Image (cartoon, rainbow, N blue to C red):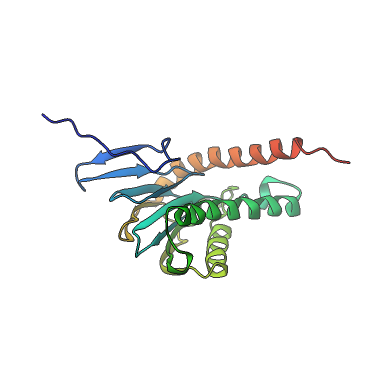
Length: 210
């Protein structure tokens, strides 16, 4: 029996898990919270979303595109709301710039880029993870500012989501998950969110005031 050989990922994305999906007869790359992936190959990009948002962006002429997965910190996590908002905006901008600039570097053109956006679920009441609305407002505002057309969106609501994106064609397979799955998504996003705040704290501690 011939061993299946999976093609190498785009340079710089060697750490993204990729495996062969026999059902779809293609490689599927998995994007976890805080990560992004860009490809020129005939493959899918997969992620799961709770409060987080995923932006699927591609150049339809070149067949180059990718997906990011991010979440903005919310005010309940820091007493200094203005300070956290500044960090939140920088973080969100960075998440979008990484994806867009990476596509342009591989040959995409800004004027041709298209987007599909997903996620931003309203998680359980009383938790610090009720940030879906903030994420939705941010990603829509950012894409409007960058004049990137949003062709499709599935945002908000109480449902976690699975997204399977094919950058070559722009096709997206979307599945809304049972609301009961929110508990697990909350745990995953809580770990991710703590990492963001830790990064903020460590960055600020390295700044010497004068």
